[in-house]
Amino acid sequence: MGTPTLDIRRDAVVENWRALDARSGAACETAAVVKADCYGLGAAEIAPAFAAAGVRTFFVAVAEEGAALRRILGNGPEIAVFSGHMAGDAALIRDAALIPMLNSPEQVARHADALPGAAFGVQLDSGMNRLGCEPADWAALRAAGLPGVPWLAMSHLACADDPDHPQNAAQLAMFRAMTDDTGLRRSLAATGGVLLGDAYHFDLTRPGIGLYGGAPFADAAPVVRLAIPVIQCRDVAPGESVGYGATWVAARPSRIATVAAGYADGILRAMSGRALLHAGGIACPLAGRVSMDLLTVDVTEYVAAQGADPEALDLLGPEQGIDAVADAAGTIGYEILTALGPRYTRRIADGPAA
Image (tube, rainbow, N blue to C red; front, side, top):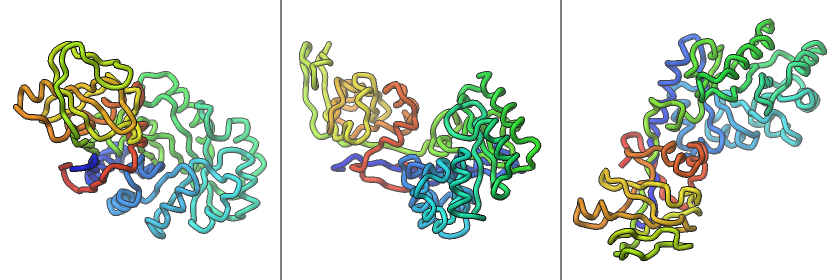
């Protein structure tokens, strides 16, 4: 193994969708969020597996992603665009049969002028203050008359990862106040909202990170394994340092493995001196700073147990998922997944990762 290998379990992604679909309830459609190239794992490989499993609706961030997804999936599935109808998007929306989730009166007007009669949804701001029509704008649009019946009315929860946060109930109440009298098909829940229970499910849920093995879906099947080959091992005496800045100094006779990945591969520099890698079930701490192409890892305990140097070390795998790695970097699992770089040998499998 000359380059790091990223194994992606396509069957686990589908298993996670099925589990979240079951939690969404029989009366509710479960979509799939596949923005950012399926959170960095490859829409060309994964989106068709979702469609084969029964996903009928997909969400992307921008129209360009939607057009690419249409080429992958062909006609049939609905593809909705969170950013709505941006200037210059009309041809993409029309040609790829996309459904923009309109976020403002300006977007409503743009869509009506550029593509009269074309499908659209609406995104409402229920308290996150990020995207969507605020209550006054929504009331004014309804009073003036929308250019057709929205395909879906949706909003997004800011604090669904924390089930006890009072903003969840406040946003639910606001969303209901904005939509209960509309008769529209509705969506409020992403992964965290699915886990909050039936009151948040409405007509369609749209899980994202939970499909790919991330929190807050604690029961998610693991999706990725990242194995990084060892280039060289060396003995380091007590008092000797390792890596840039001499930030790690050996407190005992140590065996250090230098492995072939770094921040150019999406292994965040913020995890320097904090992350663990694994070999043979043994945790091996990162020694010193993450550099562009290399990591240095203390494999002393592994060598003591196995009597030999490891050939590779796992950053992601059975012992450690994306959220544990994210904790070491002071970030979230989303960033770990979407940062994974292009230099990995990617292997898509439909069984346990090799």
